[in-house]
Structure formats: structure tokens, C-alpha cells
Image 1 (cartoon, helix red, strand yellow):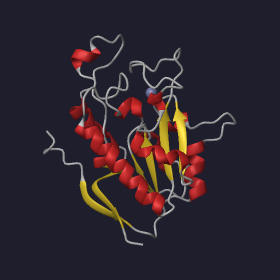
Image 2 (cartoon, helix red, strand yellow):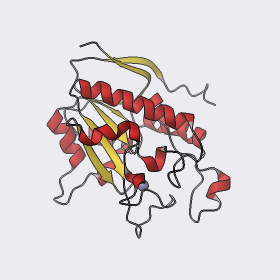
Image 3 (cartoon, helix red, strand yellow):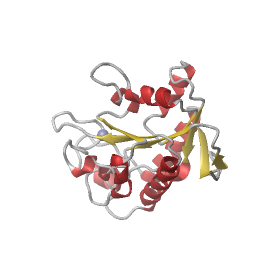
Length: 226
Ligand SMILES: [Zn+2]
């Protein structure tokens, strides 16, 4: 099936002239660290560890150039579940924190961290005063291109159409920094209300959805020399 649905372009070199931002989506222990929780891998998982490594590499490249990074964390109150997901990333636990390879972002001046408590990053970015931290981030940094993972795509493509995110023009999904969790049938069956989520299939569907929403999918990213 994958051969019949080619999704990826080749490599892309980021130029110094185009202000670029990186959006990291829940690269937190609760999704990425072995044994950390219901949505974390149960054993070492190459798709996820590669994603973590590439996310960290790209975040470093951007921060060295003083380009902005926006990291969505995930955090839920115990009495407000997020169907169809089993309980995960309960506020105050280590599950909600960035993975060790990215924890330096907590003290990085070019990084903006936002705990979201719902699936869609745009909704999760609405603040008490009704301002939107994510929209402000794009506008204040005058970002033209963003690299993103899933969870924000639907919003970003619609927002581009509505010109809410001016000057943003280009949304790029980097396939090596894309991964999704595995919730196989035999595990989901034992968790009330959980929806089966086979990793390989959902990864492909995720990239397909990204492309379907107007993102470019690239398989390699490098940055032009300073
Ligand atoms: Zn969540």
C-alpha cells in the first residue's frame, strides 16, 4: 500500500533567508519514554526513538540560529479524561515533561512551551485572557515556514486559508520526526473505552492526513551553513 501512495519528497535545505519555526508535539515521557505510562512504548521502539533523536537534532539546529521552537506538552486533570485515550500525562507527573533529550528546551530562550489538555494544539493554546499563545508565537516571530508534527495540522492549514497566521506560508511535516504511539488490539481490549491504534498503519495515515491538509512531507532536513 505504501508504494502505491508515495507521500514524501526528498531532502530540504533550510535557508537563512526564510524565518523558520519548529513545532514539537508531545515529545514528552508519557508518549515516548519506555514504560512511562499507558501511551508510552512498552519496549524500545525505533520509530519513536528516531523521532525523538531527530526532533532534538532539529531543535538544536534552529536554536543555534536563534529561530523559534514551540513545544506542546500534554497534561490532564485526573477527573477530566480524554476519550478515546486511556489515562495519560496526568498533571504533575513525569509523563507531562519533555523527554530527557529535549529537557534543555525548558531553559532555552528561543523555546516556548505550552501544556495542552486536549488534542488540537490551537484550542490548547487559548489562554485565560482569550489570546492564543500559538498564534502570537507565529506573529511575534514573523515565521514564514513551520515544521510540524501531528495534532496541529488541521488547524494550521485552515488558519493559513483564513490568513490568521500571516506571514506563515509553508507547513512542512518531516517524516523522520513523525511518530505515533502503538496501542495494539490485545492491549486496547483491556482498557475501557480505548480505541485500537496500530502504530505502522496510523503512522502512514498520519502522513497521509498531513499531506491531505496541504503540508509538504519531506524525508530529510538540513540547514544551510551560516
Ligand atoms: Zn492527552
